[in-house]
Amino acid sequence: MATATSLSLHGHGLPSPTAKTPTRRVLSVRAMAPPKAAGEAAAVESSPSPRRQVLVAGAAVAAAALVSRPAPAALAAADGKFMPVIDRKAGYSFVYPFGWQEVSVQGQDKVYKDVIEPLESVSINMIPTTKEDIRDLGPPDQVAEALVRKVLSPPTQKTKLIEAKETDIDGRAYYTFEFTAQAPNFTRHALGTITIANGKFYTLATGANERRWDKMKDRLHTIVDSFKIETKV
Image (cartoon, rainbow, N blue to C red; front, side, top):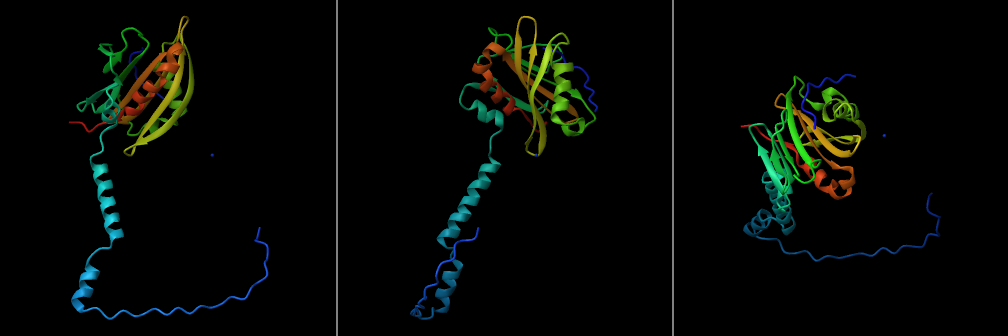
């Protein structure tokens, strides 16, 4: 796993006529109800209809759900298969699979990995930036391509960007991408997500050996999808 380096990026018939048949007008006579007393009329007008009560109640429930909605990391960790990481001082959160161990790697803020399958890991780092939005650096494919080649892979490995896209979480832009890095004796299949906030460029990367990709890809996508900028304290 490469350590963090300074990042510099530059640069989709009419219907058939039918014979008309005479229509018969039916007169309908409706009995008029006696006028309501003033007090009774006021009571009826002031009480909401059942349909209105349902609409109001539904809106209240929806509003409560939005206010109390858990963070993505908390949602992903709820089934017990993932462990949450919420670092409000650094300003981010994500999850990693249960059983992975935290290790110390120079240049990374946090790293968790499988002790049996060393290519299965997740790391996050941050570097200062004067940019305020990830889109200021360019489109997703260009930014991801440069990051994969210059930062996330050793220069001796052959890299291939598979996909890069932009997502939005709470009004903030994130770039998410998939790539492979081929070494002489293995190929790592990886995912990454990047964003800018708090004057920092955040990079989260996770992956696994290509031979275990089909088994691990859902878990790795959960890691990337859980990454979110948190309010700093």
